[in-house]
Image 1 (spheres, rainbow, N blue to C red):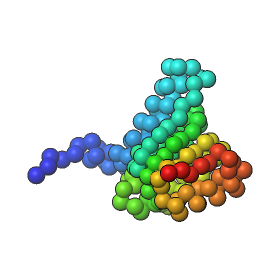
Image 2: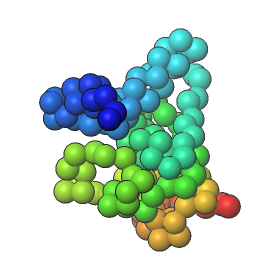
Image 3: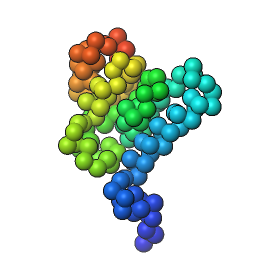
Length: 136
């Protein structure tokens, strides 16, 4: 039998998840890097899978994050590989969260086509289509 995961339990007791803690950690790291290396330093994030989604939410919280390169992004929070963020689907799903990053540069690699199409449309509507790209 596996021992209990006390870190995970403590987050749930506070009404949070381990993934929401990771989002705040990423945002705090970006703030630290800018403070340590000067405000003219651009901070870009890269992530794969669930970490890519966590990077998206961190960038939404921290405006100093200049852009993102994401790989294998789950197409929805309903996907078992997506991070656990309590109540997020009441507000938006992953493509909409990525679309909210406009006009910051966003590159999607090896991600679900439907996810990319929805995000591309949001970037286009925001007048930032040139800062969004999809690659292999």
